[in-house]
Amino acid sequence: MDRRGFLRIVGATGAAALAGSCNRMNSAVGTLSSPTNLIRFPEKTEMILLTDRPPQLETPIHYFRQDLTPNEAFFVRWHLEGIPTSVDLRTFRLNVSGHVRQPLQLSVDELRSRFDPISIVAVNQCSGNSRSFFEPHVPGGQWKHGAVGNAKWTGVSIKSILDRAQVKAGAVDVSFNGLDVPPLPSIADFVKALSIDHARDGEVMVAYSMNDQPLPMVNGFPLRLVVPGWYGTYWVKALSDITVLPQAFSNFWTDKAYRIPAGPNGSESPKALAKDTIPINRFNVRSIFVRPEPEETVHPGIPNEIEGVAFDSGYGIRRVEVSTDGGTSWADARLDPEIGKYSFRRWRASWTPRNRGQYRLMARATNAVGDTQSKEQWNRSGFMWNVIQQVDVKVD
Amino acid sequence: MTPKTKSAIVLSLGLTVLAAGCGHPQNISQEETGRGVTNIKMESMLVSNADIPVHTIVMPHDEPLFPPGRGREEFVTACVVCHSPRYITMQPRFSRATWLSEVKKMQDVYGAHISDDQAVQITDYLFSINGKASTGKGPKGTYGE
Image (cartoon, rainbow over the protein chains, first blue to last red):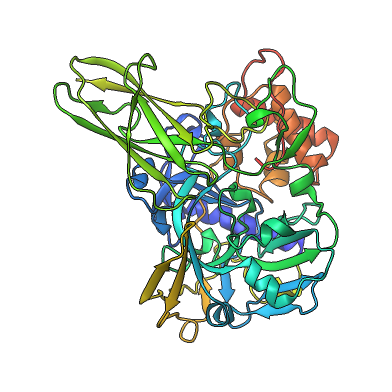
């Protein structure tokens, strides 16, 4: 499509919005100070609207009362305006090429029928989840804690696909591209890469199924790369091209974007930005309150069940401590059985507040190698938030 | 756009009306192999490939409207080609320096078709609708957020 045609269509859709095709009444600039905007996208339930084009949709926290986040409520984040809205499975192929002896063009049916399927329950989390809590504020998607979800992914390991393609000696990286396209030729196509060893670890996979259903289009139908324990930027949606490279991969989305300070926990000071940066990679440890939710009122003299989810990059959550007095005293929460090392680990505690008043609840997760959460944290991109969460509740 | 995507994508922008459902896999039996990995045997994975091979959605449009002001036309012309104006309204109020760095990022990094003069006008407009008085040097935008 040429630029002029594009502008014409944008104008037409703008007019359609004016004519009342909006899902909500509250569409004017008054939304600057409004609270939560909800929107319903195709195949999705009502979600928190960050942006509509390209879509960025956040999961309301109450969905994390379920161990597996429903597909219809799973968060959505695209980078480029040209996202796929129609896929013809008769012509769609996953292309495997580059530094291989046997290039492959695989239909979704062939992936299902010609390879052994595997399933992994794994958390996917946006690099910028919770960005809105950084002080000073940083530009970017102003997520609260819902740019994360836990799903059972079923598909084929990259290892078995690359074995079929017969990787040549000397492979270094594997790049992954999806069907999304940039709106201008000057914008880099969204392509990400993993090292050949990481890609072949037997767990990195192409998922054709999410919680035993096909993926919603906006979550990457028909195929999505799953990189357990790593941030969502690597989980390429609508995956269409796997390319094995005999040299290190290089592009804008790796060299300039999605980089973190090289120091501990990707942290730096606003007054002295880190000089050395590295590509974002594994999740740090964190916990998210599921209930009570912020500003919720609970009652005195009776047990209140409080709960949350914790996760890390795959070492496994070993301990979650909860404080109901703003961090003065801590007690161990009960951990639900482990679903999988990359999964949400649910924790629960019972709390009987004696008196009415304001209380500050906190939860702190620790993993199997002793990593725990931050007391304070900042970086210029608003990535990897894992500050110990505080939830202020009123007892009345 | 490459040939591989051409056949597979329709950039509908709300113009496509075909809407099709998608089948659901069924009858999955599992066996644990440890390490969080499960082997799955599919006795019959019913997929609608044969019946409804084209899966299509229609994207909703819910873009905020913007008040008149100096630089509004430049903003509407140059910015909403690539993204919804909601990319502005979802941000907290930023200093003029932070907004300028965002506009320069669009110009220099993503190749937005705007002149330096237009960049200043767009910055003025963004600052007028979602700015705050500067308290020293605000954080500059980075990439990929």
